[in-house]
Amino acid sequence: MSVTTQEQELLEKANEVVALLAEGQFINAMETYLADDVKLFEGNNPAKEGKAFCIAEEEKLLSTVTAFHGYNVTSGPAVSGDTTFYEAVMEFDTNDGTKHRFEQAVRTQWKDGKIVNERYYHA
Image (cartoon, rainbow, N blue to C red; front, side, top):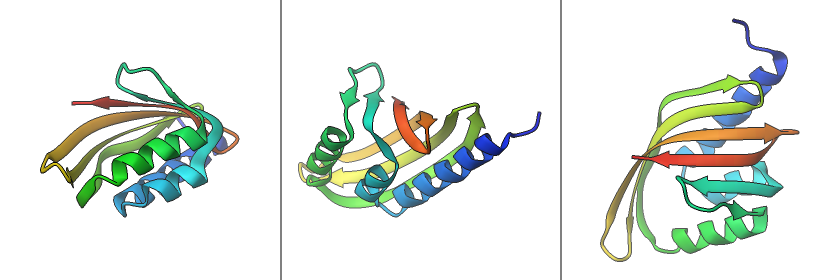
């Protein structure tokens, strides 16, 4: 099965996003790639809605991070239609002394080159 031009463009965008995340550039990635009306889901939790709100929530979390140990893609990205998928491991420490390790699958829907809906499935 061949990849369409649109799918190839989405793969390139997904790779750009994960490259920024690997560098710890979370806010830059969000400012660049989130649509204004984005919906972000953590597992089965209710959506965080709107680019400005999602960035503000991320800034709150990042203010607690004392050490960032990486965001490593372990599989993908892959694409089907307007949706990309990948698996990653993120590790960081927070100011309460907790060491966090998230293994996650990420499903991202795109429209006009922006992320409009994304869900993180954690293990």
